[in-house]
Image (cartoon, rainbow over all chains, first blue to last red; front, side):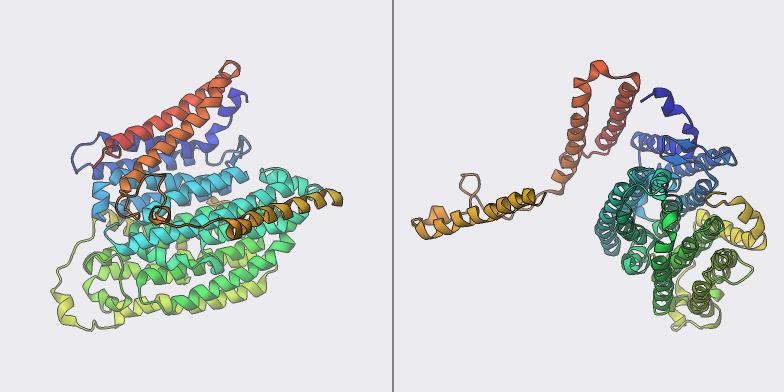
Length: 488
Length: 118
């Protein structure tokens, strides 16, 4: 290979490169530090590296899309997804600070893995090649398996890591087999080349559908679509809450970005065949997610099932399969990042009040508004936004996705989506009702516990998330113009 | 076309029948005089000491992992060494970069005490 080719358009991967070098610097700083107090320094350094990554993304924003070595592209969609993931990464690091003792001891390992996960997720959004796509998937998956078991004193955390790893490894095998079949069908690992070969009547079209089916298992696992969602509540509940907050947003954004790009650039000519199965999956995902969330008593499990339901909503955009739908999905993910991380941050703050159990039971929320008025108000905003009540960010995410789907002729799917939103309002609002209108059962015990102030960084995350949810809701057009879809 | 596959069919049939025949014939024809040593657990010919189900230290795993990294590195470096005369600058730089990444990993493991036996 020509060496010059290696540096041509390498700017496409600038944010990933910045983070990759940053990870190595972080590891070197970690082994160079003395004593126990360096973990704050590492957190600060990670945030600085991620901010540099955001800077690099902004730098290449708005340029004409170029492709690097047939493997990565810098179009508007890649940049939009990248921004969502970087924001989730920064907020995730801020939440992890001071969260549990393992981070104090092994901050270097924790933050390096955190940044590696961010790199893998960003790569997934830019990949235009089956091989890059698979490597990206593995980079962030491996990092997340370890991160979800990082709270080693907690048996549930270890259980979560084990489940996630075993099932995830299994899903990856399906994924890579699907890649192999698509390669066999199109004669190339490059998305656009596969499309060209198949559209001109070449290749081996009979392998396409089995390939899509196998890839669907891999993607479905990562974004937790319904028949492949079993791991989600257990892992979300067991993993340390800051990790859950980050991965619930980051994994979804990354896997959906890869899924959208693969289906819309490699297999658009097969849209008639894959749209209907995906539509059925979307209906299943929304319905099962929402109905199961109704019955959860743990806040983290409820948010996990709500995440499943949201995955169903975003899948509607993929079913529509238009450029407008993909930009709607980017907007949805952007809004979802703030409201979901915000909800988890409030959960973290409440965990501290109720004795650091890595989870909060919904029954303990009764009367929370009286004791923690600010937290309760923030939680109420996030819950209203998640249920899609205007004029908050979540409403416009759903609105844009549904609008794109109706325009593409999927009105019946949108009807089911809207009905599901109505169901979801019940369990989101139940939390608000519990906090504001219910009295705690054993008032005596609760009052005796002293108030534990939330850490400064998590207060910052809550403030940023509330502002973002409100501002995105009040000025949706601004952000909808900024975030681009595929082929825009 | 089909006749070629027919030979494969015969071969796979033989592959099943032959070992089965050997086992079955051994079962009926072979003499059987068991004693204590013959019934003992086979451990590479050495007499077993203590329980067979011993627990391994988790640290073997850690060192094994570091070993695998360098095993793979050697595997990659060997063809590069053989073809060194024909390599372009790009390949040499890529190799150096690859080794550098592994060195950083080793430094990290070393400083974190993964190589010290506890």
